Length: 172
Image (tube, rainbow, N blue to C red; front, side, top):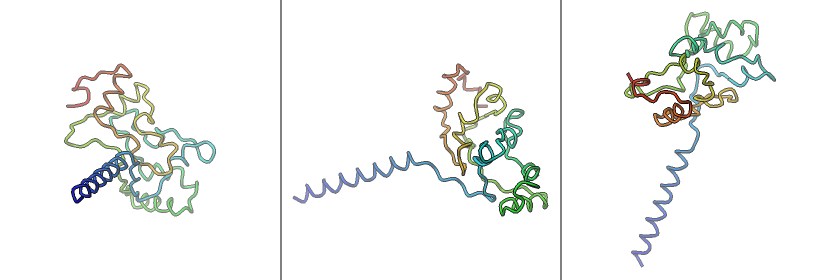
């Protein structure tokens, strides 16, 4: 009888651990807490916002390897007159007045030891939409990592688009 009880308890523990890891693997990651709350949806939807293109704020995405995060002055070019009394806009204005940038927390990055070279410019020129790699950022109120950009994921995309899968294209 003791052996049966141990076997049942062990089975329950294994099933519980499996469910825990399954839920953890499929759960959406939390959005990092940012120094200034920013709602992408509000900035890109025609209904409630100015319907900005990604490149308006991420102005270097089509010109360099890095899309870059907009600086406080870029934000204030609109927010001098748009919602200047908002607490979040006032935080931005304070950064801008001090000639500082908000310490934004990156949402997407490649691990340093992966030795990956990624160019937004090359992907932009190939017609890859931002949402292909970043998910539905336009529909997000808080940006979180929507796509787990593993090497296998990238290679699958390259193959679907008949792009090179030569190692040296991405690893240098």
